[in-house]
Structure formats: structure tokens, C-alpha cells
Length: 272
Length: 342
Image (cartoon, rainbow over all chains, first blue to last red; front, side, top):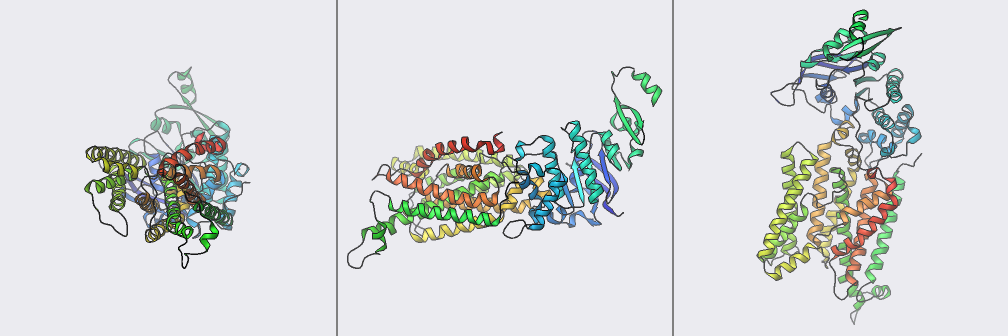
């Protein structure tokens, strides 16, 4: 498998005085599902914005498919990297299919319309995300989970090898969280997409992600196989929270232990 | 599944709209203080005796109706563009200070008492045009200084510049002579006059050219409705789209304002009305708004000509009185279709 995202010595700060990301290097191979985890404010979203070209690095390089990100124009970059941000609903009521079709905007003909191939790609994206059933409804009339699936459908319709997602399951209930992760895993396994998702849910991430980039304060980071990165020691170090680990077959589950957890001492002593 | 907008459907709707517009123009050109017959008009200018019907039609009615079309289409289209760029349903062509800039230009021209002409245009029109464009440029510049391109900064700059220039207008009005005040206020209310064909020719080429150019960036305007970052990651060149859209919308508004003064409501109501009925897709919204804006202003101006004939009302008064209730009916009837009301 070839490397599709190659980050070397990346640093970034919103002001010259304060750097938020410092000297970060990692590689992401084509067709892997990578989770980015870490506490609030360490620069996870900033990293995502750097990877999609919305921000420019202060130093270091980002290569997408072996080509430096700054050599792409908006159109060619959109063909490589699609982004799902935390949801935003526009003021004017676009329908689901109109929204998904917008991913094809750079490929429209001079008259400003989609061709057969665009329509086919959009229909496939609607089918894959199970949104075809409400394709003609307005975005505003959907539930949070349905809307998130629509935005993922739009990202799929960009037909790009890489999908970046910023907390795709925040605000969703249990069923929809699992639904979104199943959908992303499907896209990875069936279409060979490379998926990079920011997540706060360690348990979902450890079930679905092949690799984890655990980003801590002061750009202390660790990237590797999920089972190696997620350990109670690492999690306590990065998040400052003690966890209790349950192993069930090949899956590991992390249960956070608060200060007031009953029998906190007993559990930690016996099991960790 | 809902039928998507197709080129065929769009062409059909635009052509039907244009036919309705032509019919409305024809009917309105025959109505007026002096009623004329189409048959008499077709007899031509007359060889021996002058043909009054023909004269009224060609020299008074036709230029005025063409002007109304032009101004209505320009204001409606630029309203669509400003609402999309600012992602704000309250935006209209005047939101970034065009109205106060044009007003200030007009009152300066009146007070200085210039009496030269450019292409048959009075100094009021020339100063209003310059004032409108100058103000938009100023607001754009301040908005840019406030941040890379923040919609809120731009809107606030527009509101403040508007308020400041309005204060200057008030000041100038209070020191002006009463005759000068009267002609300024009449201009500020928005008014149609008979223009000669050269002015109409130049004006319509600007407006039609501008609308065609805006149509070419309408898919990008769709993407921009989701916000700049979203549009960018969808592969849209946002800086280019924004500059082109702003420049053209401001230019056609300035043309409209310099020809007819400040006609309110058209640029706000028509885009919303069309959106309520046909949906938010800009590829359709833009051309249909232009046509509906033209139809609306032709009808409003006809009402303004005849309702207290032989005197005339400023057309801006009619657009507000006609447009307000009409829009409220539409709003109630179609509101279930649009999500921003939820």
C-alpha cells in the first residue's frame, strides 16, 4: 500500500508568537482508517484544516499522493480530499440531492449543469449512505443523524480517495453513532477510501480505526496501531483520566473512572 | 424522487417567463392617462398628419417600460447575489451602502446646481452612480481590513457606512433650499422617467451582460451558501467567485439606481418570492428573479402612472405598497417548503 498523506515536520500557529502544532511527522497509507484523538484545544481540527489545504503550514510539508499540497488548485485538491465538517445548515432550503450534487460543482459543464456520470456518482453516494429514500426532502427537515449522512454522501460524491471528518458522530445518539462508523468502514473496505476522522469516542475508535494519532498538549503525539496506542497509561497521560479496561475477544473497552466512582481504588488496584 | 433541475426545464421556464414579460409590457404600454390602441400604433408615424397614438407609444410609454424592466431585473438579480454571498435572508442590493452613497452623490449634485449632461444624463444620475460604486468599494475595503473575508465584518461596515452617509444626507438636506430638497426627496423615493434610447441601450447592455455573467457563476453561489470553508473544500475558487459576484452585483445596482433613484423592496422581495415557489438553486433563481423583477416593476410603474393621473406617484411607493402584502401572502402559502423558517 502506498502512502497517500505524508506529513513532515509540520508546524502551525494562528499567531506568530504561539504555535499550536509543532514538528509533527506521520504517514498515512492508502485505504486505512485513521482516528485522531486527544483533548480539546490541542489542534486536532487545525490539523484537519491543514490536511485539506484550508490553512497553510508555518513550516514543514504536507504531500497528498506524493505531490505537495500547495501544488494543487482548489479543483484538483477537492478531487483528492473531501471534508465533512461539524454540521452547518445553510439559511436557504436546499434539498438532500441538491446538496450532494454540489460536490460535483467543479466538474459542471459551461452551462452549469451536471452530466450523466455526475448523476450516477451522486446516486451511488446516496445509496451508500442510505439517504436516497429522503433525497427530495429539505436539509432543515432532517434529524441530526440523517443530515450527517447527507454530508458524508456529499463527501463520497466528490469521488476523492481521502475523506477527512471532524467529529462525525458528536450530537448523535448511540444508534446513529454506530451507523456512521459502519458507513465509513464500508467506504473503506468496499471503495478503498482512506478515512481520517477526529473523534472523542475512544471505544468507537478502537473498534473501527486501524491506526490512531493520539495528540496531546504541546504537540506530544503518538501514531501507530490502535491496540498499541490506546492503553490505560497513554490515555491517562494524554487526557488526565483514569480508565478501566475490559477485554472481550479481540476488542478492548475503556471505561473512564471519575473522582467519585464507587470503589474507585478497588477497581483500579485489582484490574489494571 | 424529486425531479432535478435540468437544462431543458430551465430553458422552458425562462422562455415562458420572457413571454409573460412581453405580454405584460404590451398590455401596460397601452394603459395610461391617454388610452391608445395597438392598431393605431401599427399605422406608423403617419405621413401627412402626425399619429398621436404612435408618438405616445414610442416616445413615452416604450422607453419608460423598458427602463422599468431594466431596473427591476437589475435590482432583483443583485438582491439574489447579495443574499447568497452574505448568507443572509435580509440582504438586499442596498445593504452594503449603495443607497446612501447614491443618495449622497445625488444631493451633492443638486446642491452644487450643476447643469451639464453626460450622454443625456443629468448630473444627479452621474453623481449617484459614482457615489454608489464608491461606497461599495469603501465598504468592501473596510470589510477586508476587518478580516480576510468575514461576512459579519462586511455587513457591519455596510450598516455603519449607511448610517454615517444618511446623517450627512440629513445634514445637507437641512442646509439646502426648499426647491433643492424637494427634488432630492423625489429622487430618493425612486422614480421612473422617460429616457432616450441611447441611455436605455447602454443601460440594458450593462444589466443583461451582468446577469449573464452572474448566471455563469451560479453553481458556485450554490456551494457558497454552505459557507466559505465548505465551498472551498468542494473545489470552488471562493475568492474569485466572491469578487466577480460582488463587482457585478454592485455595478448593475449602481446602473439601476442612477437611472431611477432608490426603488425599495424589489431586490428583497422578488428573490424571496421566486425562492419560495421554485426553490433555492441559483441557476434557476437568478434568471427567474430577473424576469419576475422586471414584470413586477413594469406593473408597479403602470400603477404609479395611472392611479392619480394625470399626476404620478413615485414608483418606490407603489413597490412597497404592492409588494409588502403580496409577499406576506406568498410567505404564508409556501412557508412549509422552506427550511430557514423552521
